[in-house]
Image (cartoon, rainbow, N blue to C red):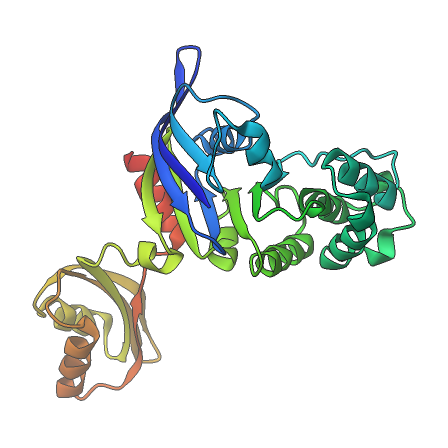
Length: 312
């Protein structure tokens, strides 16, 4: 649905995008992650025709962004970070206005209004002015305006920015619902957003893509080092000694000293040949110790994000 190749964008002497390339499949929710100023919004503005690129190519639903921008915009629904709504208008009045701007055929306007109002949970708000709505409901109106012309692709820039926790959960659920029917490109710097919502994520830093994959595959990408948390009925010194004698252990960190006879340590294994949990279990059993906890600690998406964006 979206194909981007070697995209370059300069703002004067500052290069905001340095050869960005990626693709998005039909029916996919793709997260575009990066710190502030990484190039997320610039990429989206190029794709939606708000600004032009200085190099590279981009197509949306088969249409070239540079040479056929009107056709591209017909395929897109766009929700920028600052929701584009007129607060003095009523909810239905505004959506009807957007339907006209988007050239929805007159005979289908009522149907599209009913569809997006129901989809975005606005039925109880149709009699109100937009300025009377909470921020969460204003974001829903913004989503409704992006969907009024029934585009196959939805692009959203920081959709839950500045929302409270309950509003954030509501919008995430709504995005997942929309993603069942449409392709969604969603930019965010909130790792929980990506994990909860996206099928696949791209991480961009300083105008370059530094990682790509499912949230699960990214946090497991550093398979050469594996951490295991162990809690056994033993002294901390004995547990450290046991773990330190195992093959492949690179580092041991004491998580808690012995309390009521139990001690906890985290062991880091460097490129283990087998699952280190099996090795630890066998060693603890040989000692005759009771084992209360034994699990692998995987890197969180936030930890992975910090790792790749600070190294880039």
